[in-house]
Image (cartoon, rainbow, N blue to C red; front, side, top):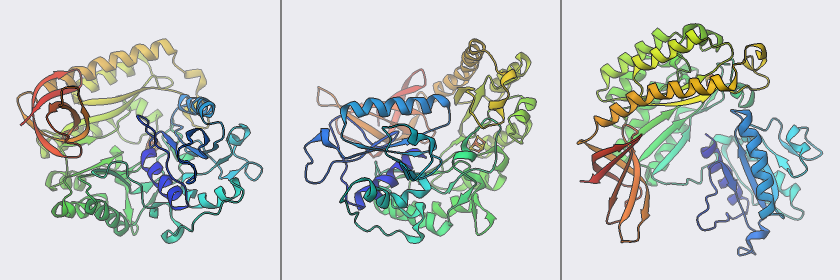
Length: 448
Ligand code: SF4
């Protein structure tokens, strides 16, 4: 989500007259958004005018790290004005005119909520004396209507909704990103179509809760998937999405995934825990049985599908018994991957207030490793089964080696990470790779 937001911020900055600063080996889109040099002095790197940090507040650690990184970068770019956006920002504005707590840091000049990024040219005119932004026009002044400066033309991210209405007890997102707002289907389709015309082979639809997507009041994520699937005839090969919620993972979505030409046999479905009582404390509003039933249907209808999830270990009050339920659950479901997090308290969330139930760090870490072992067992066994098979790999990196060959890496349709070597640059191409062996979560192969 942040990566995609940064692509929109980047576009707005370029349109209002800034140019991106690029340096060898450094990347400026993604977690750190560094934009700019003045057009007149492109060579004077130390004089870059503006750095915008797109922040994450999913954990306290992420926030602390962002502040550290900003201070660190200021040593290299002392003349730059510093802006901050993303989930850490509560109120758009510059010093004096806004009360956002981030502005108490001397080194932050302005902040803006990502939904307000259309206001960026005006903010910058106030920040830089004498600067007049080129006029930017976006339909309805909507953040969604800012065209992204895509990083990789062949692999793009398209936001379909913002915010979340679920209010899980540990999560800050509904408080930072606000309530759910979906983008009209026609608008999403038009953006996807333009991206496909420009070379997109893989589209990932993104949002905090994609399967509660609505158009004209109707809940219709499956319809949206099928609509975008029409772009297969124009060159779209893969359609992915993240993140989904088990409560809204309806049969029509599974049917669409089983029938569409562009769907991939991979589903990421965050469950968070394997104990019903703990899921209740997390306010996740579904049961383990319901989750497993969805997985059963997905596996029945989509042969060879891979499944990943998100898990939190060490949630306040998690008993040894509940943790054992999680281990048993992991053994039953046999995940292909889990993004497992150790619970970290967030201020202003219900779980963050349960201080008397906090689990000691040592136990949380032990539980993390125990669950990780369970996931590894199934994830590695599932990957072993791919050995000898030929998988379609979309090449995301082609690095030249000393001997004239290229080392490639990319993802198969099952979302396996695959490495192989060949004699030419294959960046952005989808190629058949025969899998030869496994190294932890990674598969190695040979170009067919
Ligand atoms: Fe946070 Fe996801 Fe729960 Fe929404 S559904 S509150 S984004 S964890």
